[in-house]
Length: 328
Image (cartoon, rainbow, N blue to C red; front, side, top):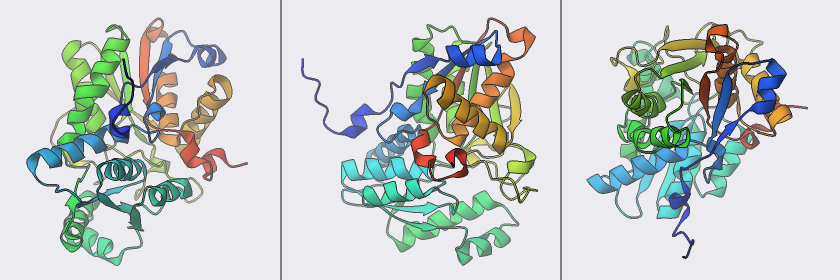
């Protein structure tokens, strides 16, 4: 039987689960840590799932026409995934990037034929933030709205699109449930745009309400826009959930969607990501380091001995080789 695919979008998903046996021994853990390696997606990150879902949803609704332009705003991964999906489907893509996006991410965007502009140096953004009383998310949404008019483009708007959690409900959650035979005690993920918690977390809770959903967010010293220590880097790709007006719209007014929320500082995330590379041969980015750090903290608790913790590792460390994460 032929195994030739029509294009790269057919390769998205079905990423593997791997147990971190050596890291468990290194830290003296009595719980089992299993990680879902999203860098097995074609552009090496989890956002490919939502990119395809948002584009196909727009196609089905007639919001996106052949040869059209797509725009979105991200710290890097969503833009890369949308650029790849756009290239595979014959669309143009324009990204609004956070200034802190890595050089690798910017180069990859260009390679896919996309263009981008950085937003934190955009005077219009600051006007909108002031207009909305400091609500950065509303300002980002308005910036996308204005961009879609100016560029005659479709704004996927990952922060508000219901096609975002739908992707994880249809794919990520079922994959984890099936690959573990339903034997899972904790699911660890970042809140981010809210898609993974709502989609994968929601699916797993439906299958077994006893599964604990643990979310992580930047610690107070690593949060963008809030008391960030000047000598400490921002935790890229990880959004704060509480205490700041930065919460993703998909998570607003949804109540408590997680069972526990853990703060992670950037240095701890870096250390965990480096440990994954050193002890397991798994090269991941800093948000994945935050997920792994969170999983390790859970595994250290005596009451969790013998439990299985599944952590979603969002992307590859290859995209961060020029950042402080892997600096020589």
